[in-house]
Amino acid sequence: MYQIDDLTKTYQQGKRVVRALRGVSLTIGDGELVAVQGPTGGGKSTLLQMLGGLDRPTSGTVKLDGADLAGMSDAQLTAARAETIGFVFQNFNLIPTLTALENVETALVPAKIPRQTRNARALAALESVGLGDRGDHLPGELSGGQQQRVAIARALVKNPKVLLADEPTGNLDEETRDEIVDLIVGLWKDQGLTIVLVTHDSVVAQRTPRRLRIAKGAVKDLTAA
Image (tube, rainbow, N blue to C red):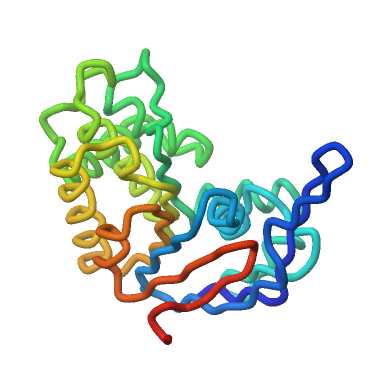
């Protein structure tokens, strides 16, 4: 479970101070599927970075199962991300010279898992997203939707507790978008993952049981409204 209390994040842009998050407090329970919407620059991606330990807040706390991510050392944060949190991004972030299977395996390398075990887990992850027969394909040989499925498999292969997705359908056409959302919702139902999904697309957000809106660094729970 996430417990976020009085979270603030400010950036300095020249002489201008940008307040990306302004005293955000909220709870995300185990096994929730939550969409985060809002205007560009409103703080969506900043909030997701805080939840993933990819950036540190200016003040406030971000606790995951009671452990304050903001108070961890860099090494502790790296371990938490490697063991607990899976990430999916809009641009897939696949390594173009590696096959789909090898791209998924890369997520397990920091854990020092033996190669044979990595291979088996990566293949199982690809099969879970419907790409068990595409493991030997390079990203350039796959469609956008297939590349995003590989990226999701890479996030899942670690057996994370949390999946954080930043505009995972932003580069996809409507039909492929719907397929990826179906996949994410299915994974949520089948595996009990906690999923936080940033999206500008209301069609995507409406597929989730809980929707948050963030604008000018402040969060409103639309589901409770």
